[in-house]
Image 1 (cartoon, rainbow, N blue to C red):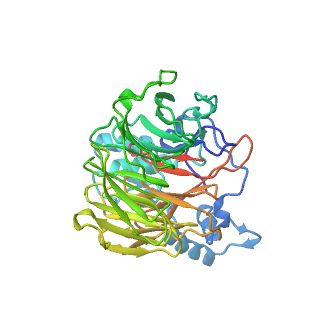
Image 2 (cartoon, rainbow, N blue to C red):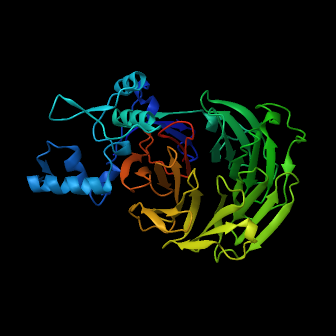
Image 3 (cartoon, rainbow, N blue to C red):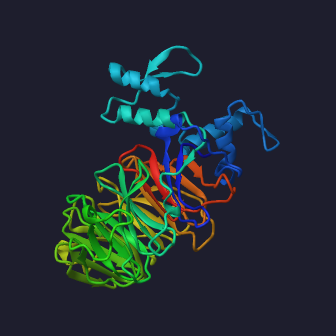
Length: 463
């Protein structure tokens, strides 16, 4: 069942649009999303139990009567595999009620279904109590996602007369209004996604290439690293990136160019903003000095198959993790001159990507065809298996990220028109968001996705 709001950018036919899903704006947006296809829950293993719990007055489902034993069984199955509301909330609250509670400092109250009396909640008064209550109230107030463009970038012509075709994107780490995206034609664009206008534009270097890696520097928020599939790696200062239509005849002196890394697919900067990590469709990983552009180390044969993604941890500048199509995820430490990994963890299929949780306590590993797991970062032990059903496709590349800090995860695959939202600690499914072009009634598929670091229960998709 799909809930919340979707904001759409771009051209559906090209499958290179960008979508932003934000439940917080659902109450003030009038254009509703109406699905013309069955909800994804109809294809889930526990579809019948799910429907019985959500429709308590339902007497017959699929021509089968629903008895008391069915309802008891359904309740048990539902509590094991699904969440009714975020953060284990059992009853829907209004946003106004939560705000009143926050302003008056009273304990959160929940209304029982069978009584008019209010009883204190057992959630506890943690520092996140009110923000989590607001999140639950907003999600509980929406029944379907809403589609709205964040900016019409696909219809903006390039210098060669072509439309911009987004391929990769990243939120700015400290400015909530900015994000950068790279295109299939090698351009880098910085936009204000709140206003929908382009802030800076960096044209392609000339060679045919696609931007596959982007990473903002945290300590130097005007710096943006971009890597392309032909191995080009450059560090830009967006303060010197001219707006659309400016004179790009000369390259800015603020741009740092790095040694090439062949078949590049991933770039990342460490927490100290002094080293860059690259990987690609090879068995190599390289580390660069961010100030000089020189390659410091080149590690070969870290895996038996290509290393699609390599990521530094969020807080330790020497720790990084690699994920490979050889089914393995490996943790490394640059202080130990990594010949052997700190540990290795295996998946049953090839790994598409891996990322650290914001506090570095966990790893989120995504393998081909919906094999998504959360591991303990300390030793690689399994913490959560999200149990997402596979499709049987060897080309259904799955990507997953954290959202709402590390409370929830979002997961999408390139062969499926659905985004799944799950509790990171329990693995229980919160929502399935079905993607569909309401005009053509065509389906949309996920190339990339991210959780908004500034807005609770918000995410952006590249389709």
